[in-house]
Image (cartoon, rainbow, N blue to C red; front, side, top):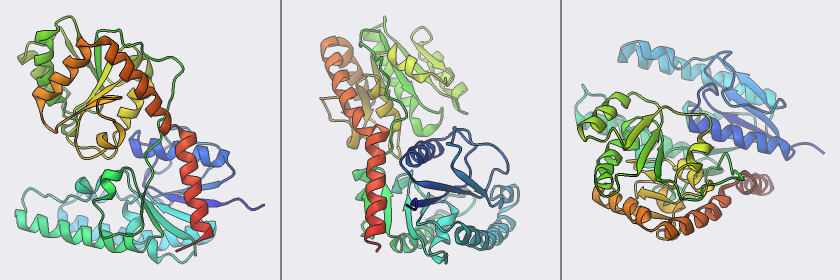
Length: 385
């Protein structure tokens, strides 16, 4: 019996970001369930994948190098980009015609601009790992704001034209799905959690945890301000934030200015984040926005309730407020502190919420999410649009 053949288009696999990690989880699952997987790359040269891939997965490197033009001023960069897009259209079509996939999946990078003009005959679909509001933003500081806005609208209009032609377009949350009213082909499949440990937290540790990059998006400046309020009421508790990024020094300065050096610790990212979750009693998500918020599910899988801002988007899809975590109005720093204090002061409630969180996280195990992808693939091949 012929295996169903899936081709994924992504710039590269050598970088340890969320999109690469989730794709690796999915394709490893799919090959174990009888699928033949091909991954088509445009960048990264011969750099090996960061996350381990099943050896049966075939990589195809087109060697277009979209990163190189960023060395130049904008006019030359635009010219080089357009030249590379013409090369991409030719090379991608040649690769797909050689592979002959049943389904080709765009992860909505440069390939989305040409995928509908491929002649290989496969079903074309897309999946996005961002939310619409923060995708394809255009903001060059020296351009007038009206021109930035005009370019961004044209760029999004072009994207919508391409998405309308796909058989299916997969988004991560129901919240984000509502932001694509122009499309009739949207479906929701969340990201899978990468672990579901046997050992979990008992929620008795006087420690709160947050995990993410030290960048503005993650809102750790807001969390540190909230922790100043928490530390005044519960000086015996500590907050540990795990991550790396360019704002680490700035955040450390904020910790020092707020005299929190004895209770708030900015740690570097760790490979064994599970053990860090398990030595904590609750987790906090202070992000200004998310594409999904996988760290919420990761904390839940370790038996932690999560206190999160209702940022766009993800927390409202994942957390059942008052049952397995707490949802705090976006940007309400005092409310975030109150939510943390509430769970600190109610240990039994914290433990019960942690148990519910663990049950919720089971809905995001790879077996569950993988089955949703397989159902989608089978439906597309049985009833192509």
